[in-house]
Image (cartoon, rainbow, N blue to C red; front, side, top):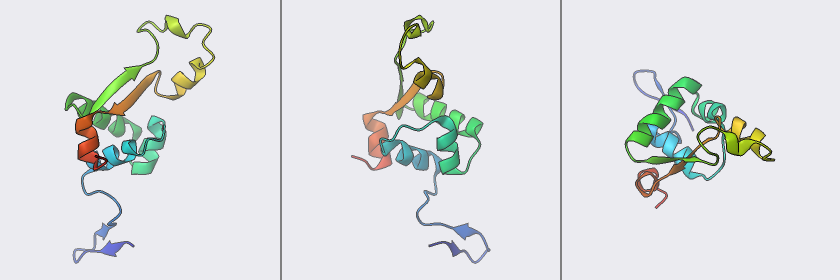
Length: 106
């Protein structure tokens, strides 16, 4: 249900008022999403979502996981190498305990 405030602004009670908490809630759903998919779900620019991910990481709400070595040499011959490219060039974000609490998942 979408309501209109007295000022005429739309208000959707299912969407978080805080976009960072909204992003944490999306990540807490434990579904793998690309950066573009996250941006689409938030109706935001992918660059903005990338900045939000970085901010949450620096705040201790997310941890970055890399499946391959820093130079990408571990990808040679790996059957999942293409999947890493889909997931923001091998970058995968996971909620920390702090992030899970902030998302309301704990």
